[in-house]
Amino acid sequence: MEKHQMLMVPVLLATAGVFQIGAAIALILNRYTYVVSLLLAVLVLTINVNLHDFWNYTGVEGAHEMQNFVKNLGILAGLLVLAGHARMELDRKG
Image 1 (cartoon, rainbow, N blue to C red):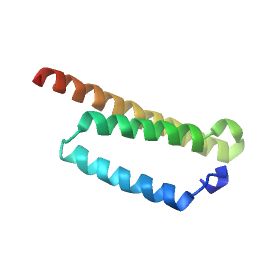
Image 2 (image 1 turned 60 degrees about the vertical axis):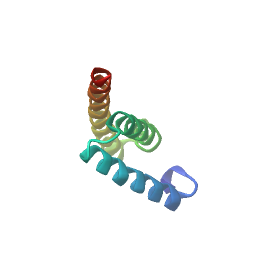
Image 3 (image 1 turned 120 degrees about the horizontal axis):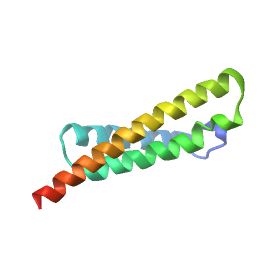
C-alpha cells in the first residue's frame, strides 16, 4: 500500500483485517451470506485494481503482480457464485 502512495496505511490494513475476519466468521456461521459475499467481492475487486497493477511493471515483479491479480479474479468469481447461491436461497425462502 505504501508503494502505491496510499494514505493511512495502518488504519486501512487494520480495517480490512477486522472486516475480513468478521466476514469469514459470518460466512462460516452462514449468516448474512449474500451481503457479506458481495462486500468481500467489492473489497477484492478494489484491492485487485489498485494494488495488483501488473500492467505498470515488467519482469519478475510484473509476473508476480499478474499472478496475484489472476488469483484474486478466481476468489472474486467464487464470491460472486456464493452471493448468487445465497440470493437464490433467500428468494426461495420467501
